Length: 201
Image 1: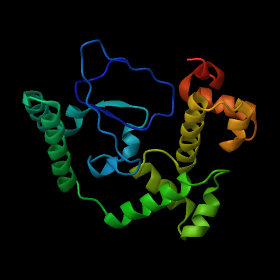
Image 2: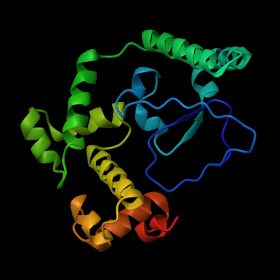
Image 3: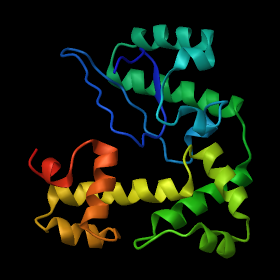
Image 4: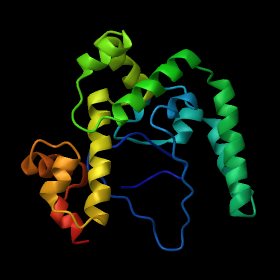
């Protein structure tokens, strides 16, 4: 995929491959799942499965930022300049702290689930309607709570596939998949590869 000089990536739920040409350097800022919306005027769902040019979001501010970023002499200086830019965005794009705290709590609850996810249980436990929870996740996280749980489960399985000597069947059950077929199908939907193919890499 071709990427802009200043790229904003949302949550990716489809297989994607990006490569950096030899001799180039890539500086990446990674946000907590619910936190990226604090820095940008758009809802997080605008960036899901998208590579967005930051210049399209911040206009002239992005052009000035890139030029000044490249003027910084060292990597620590670039990081400090990037941090300052993001803090300024945080101040400009003030959003509801109450909503942020709620979404953070909901994300943690979903993340800690090891077996299955049921939005009805989440709704009953926190006293909010399913529709409201879906709306919060769409705005702050960019994906549904069901998809967030699936991504979390996939990430756990990917880590085990790459580092564990356990069988794929054991990994599937440990991560809460119904069976190995379910595991392989969902794993491939994110990577384009089967768990066995990834294990051989």
